[in-house]
Every structure is written in structure tokens, then in C-alpha cells.
Image (spheres, rainbow, N blue to C red):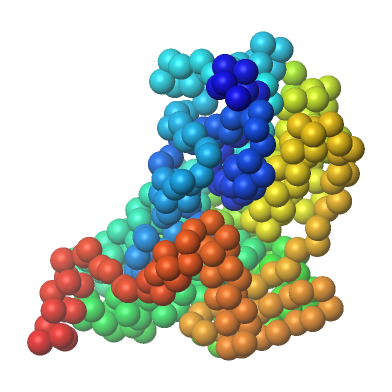
Length: 413
């Protein structure tokens, strides 16, 4: 079919939902559809492993070029930052100055960090929601050891005191890795590891509150055994230059790592005609149409569905949406969206993870292997098997810090 006569499906967002939808649509090889993926990055970030970049492992584990994912696939990739969507005119505008016309649009922009308007947190805390944030945090962790070497005795505790706020899966995964990584850095910098302190603050009464209580308790005990100080039922109220304040205590620290919350991407609220639920997500019907628009679909974190906000849900949504678009193209009855229950596999330190799959709970090395298999399964779903295996095996520790490089060089001689 002549390209001018094709119906254009534009997918906005290169995250889990967007790439899954584009890949599945490409597999269907619909003769009258042109598939376009617009992303503000040239690569896909595998968020479940970004915490590993903070603790020294290769960015290649989490940074996968879109060209690799869509090589020899019938998907056009456009690099642009979307600045406007006109749902009435069926057009999108980008920061490049380009205007894109669509027949159907799939919005999969994901979520962003929320700081709850707490004074000082946004300006002074560190996150790892992107590869750039992870590398910035890693650089800072090296820097605190240099600060230690030039600090007065009274400043030593603050220099090597790491505080992680948010006891959800992301926070727990990072803290578990930090219990290994910080002693590693201390050794490379020639510093006594006993000066390193790692604290976790969680506003709820238990860690990972989305999991069953028994699983939360096992995770709590594991972190405690690794030397993490855990403070429950506490919320950060303010962060100053060198201290963190809660309602009933203060902590001297130069490092606050924020994992305490996320919200729907603010851009959805800037699109005229979209109706948002009070939770900030977009109101959708039983086919994930945005309310009032038969050619506008919302998938992933922003869709007001039961399990929105998780990678598994985003992947499920992408596949579902490809089926909806294919059904429409063939004038078939549309499949109704049925939320899919999710499973959890939360690593805590090296070779230990807590897995919760419905009534089944698994801990320890077996849980860790299940998580590794889940990661590999995803890589195999978007890449050729040889490249997926190469990414999954890439666990080389790479340190850019001059002191660490010198120490590693001496150790290898």
C-alpha cells in the first residue's frame, strides 16, 4: 500500500509500554498501518537494573539503543521531545519544531519523581530514576570518601552517612547493594569501613508495604542483618545542607537518596481534553481509550488501571494495545482490558531476593535466580538471543574515580 494511504499510529514514549506496543504491532505486519515511535532518548532504560549502575556495574546493562531493539523491524524511530498534543486536530508538536499527524496515538510517557513539596529535598537529594541520575549518584558516592579525607573529625560521620528515603522495591534494592559497595569503596580509598553508616527511612509501618506482611518482615530482617538502620513511621520534613529532619529526629548527612514516590508525568495534565482522575492518572474506558477519544490510547503508568505503575503492567499494556489496534484494523470486536496481577522479585544484597507470586513466597538464592531469569526473559523479548545474553552477563565493575583506578591497578599487579 502507498505510504500516503497508510494509517499512522504514533507511539509516544520509549519505555516498557511504548517499545512493547511497537514491537508487537510490527510483528502483526498490518498492511494499512505505519508505526512510528517518538522518544526523547536514543535508548531504552531498563529501570529495574539502574540501581546496579550506582554501585559500579556497567551502564550497558540498562542502556539499550532503540536501533538495536527495532533493527529490521517495520517501526520508524523519531528522536524528539514532545511539547504539545492537539487531540482535536490529531497532531503532535515537538521541541525540534516538527509537527506530526496521526490517525491513532498511544501515549506511554511513564511517571516522574514526586518530592511532596518538602523543603530542600528536590534541590539537594539524589535519585536514580534514569541512567544520568544513577551515574551522578555514583560520582557523588566516590566524592564523599574524598571529603572524608579532608574533613574534621566532627564532620566524618556526616560525610560517610548515607540516608535512603523510601522503603519500596527501588529503595530496598539500592540499599542492599550499598551494603556491599560502600565497604568496597572504603577499601579502595584506604578508609576504615566502620565509619560508613547506611540508614533507611520509610513513612509506612513496614518496608515494601505493597507486599504481604511476612515478605516485608523477611526483607526487613535481611537488611538489618546487612547492617542497615531502618526507621519506620517517619517522614522527612526538611533537608538542609548537612542534615535531614524528620518530626522527631535529625540526621547529619551529606547524602540523601530519594526513592519515596512517583507521580504521573506532568505532561498529561498539559494536554487539552484529557480527563484526569484525582490520583493524577488519565481516565480511560475498558479498552484504554482516553475518555472521549476513540483514537487516543493511554498505557503504562498514566492509565488509571489497578496495577499501573509497575514494569510488568506496562509490558502487559503494550501487548494489549497492539491487539486492540489490530482488532480495529480488521473490524473485529475489541478485547476488553483485564488487569493482570503482578509478581514481585526484590533483590536484597548479593545473591538473595524475596519473591512473591500470589500465595507463593521464595527467599534466598533461589529467589535471586528467579529475578535473574525474569530479567533475561525480558531481554530475550526485545533483542536477539546473543545480544540478550551478552547484556545479562555484563556485570563488570567499572570505576572512573582516580583513587579507585589506582587501587585496582595495584591490586592487579
